[in-house]
Amino acid sequence: MADAVIDIVGQGDLPLVVELYNQVFRPAKTIESFARRYLGRHNVLQMVARVKDKPAGFFLGFELKPDTFFGWFYGVMPEFRRMGIGSQLMEAAQGWAAQNEYETFRLECHNTHRPMMHLAIELGYDVVGIRWDADRGDNLVLFEKSLTGGR
Image (tube, rainbow, N blue to C red; front, side, top):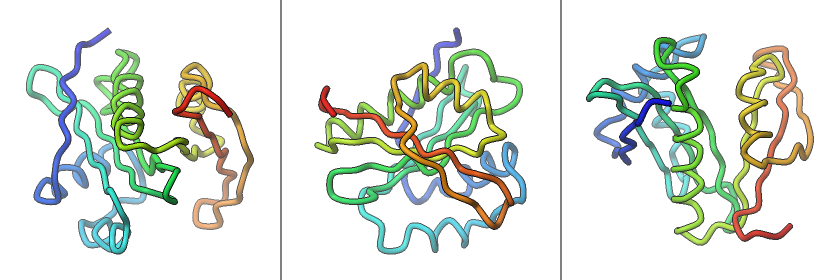
């Protein structure tokens, strides 16, 4: 397991976050598309994981509703996969959300992203539904985890 350093980064680091996103996901997105998504959102959280000062992964999230934090995107650079970076990012984001008094953490995952689905289940998330993503033509699996110990 790699020992990643996970930093919370600000809006000024959005170009780095978008660059990392575009190394993991397709189609590519622009800085402006992320900035639009953040408009009106409360408690936007951006994290970057680094291994030996090299960006290894990222997390993006924001408040979905007053008691629920939403993990919008996680990504791990291909050369750092299967080293525990995803788990460390998820645990750091959950910790931040719990410290900020959110009761529930929600995330969505495309049905085709099996490693992420396995990780969510391994970390104690429950499947709470599915929804169709017309943009990608695939189902999204909805996961939630209680941050207060009960459901």
